[in-house]
Length: 411
Image (cartoon, rainbow, N blue to C red; front, side, top):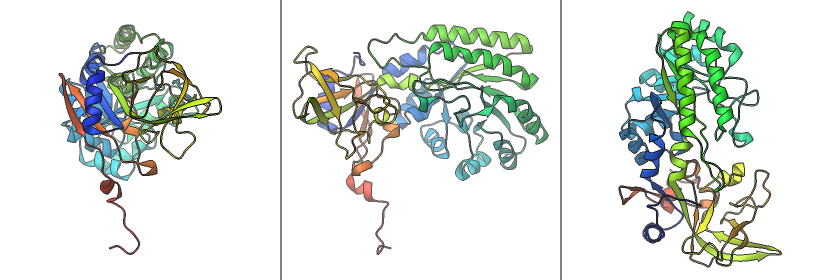
């Protein structure tokens, strides 16, 4: 079980004392290391839905990483972090009203995920240049809900429709100069590189207009300690060979882009939560903590695994099978469960009221998917950069939680 070396027990105890729990803590150095391993690509574009904290976005901007947005709100968030509109790509399967208005006003790049969006883009930005997200007919993710390709996925333009889409865009005065394929989140090496063949087959349909190819994202993270690390160098080399092959076939250079989200930020983050107490239900021992799926939804939503540890406890101290659950009024509010909701006890040491429990590799799809369910305010976030801990989002107050609501008799 690993964690960023700078996030020591002493520091986490200090931060929990200072800012309370639940608490998100991120390590900037881990993010930088994950960016570095993908530098072979011409462009790295961060899928900010994984973690959209403004400080994280600004850190990545300073590293030369561009950004992906899936809503008008994410475009605004990226710009608030210092990104210029031209450094932002809007990728989605629809233009809702705010997004369509935004792309008509700002020079953000557009990546079309549905064929009907072509006419809509032509209305608000005549003569625009855009890229296309293509569904290659297959997909793969670590869970069914994270599979973004094939007939069971809403994402992308179906591969067989691409020639007609290119023709329609040309008739409307649009230029389609880029191809993007993303098959799922947390996929494996074999499926991710299967995309190379699909892209190679689809690229010639764009002809001389093709200037950009995106390998998508979905690069996995070894959430379980015994899992092998993802071979990023091999992944980069495979895609560079694909790029070279496409360039030879087309007779001109193209830009190769990768769009990681989880890969850049998952391992940088810990969810720090405090033990409220323990109890025994028949044969099952429970550790109850102050953070539930209102903080980290992945175990309840996907049955996702996160390593768990207790600060200050020796790994061999009174270890026994235990379940870890949160404070919500929901039976599914449990960190130790499988994809079907079945309980999966973990070998954990004794915990006492007041101990700090850590949920590891929680930097991606943690705070970004948080909610105020059951009236719990959003947790604070801390980013440790060059050995200094910065509060990058303060804890939401109860007054802020209620501020936008009005009773029937209030003006």
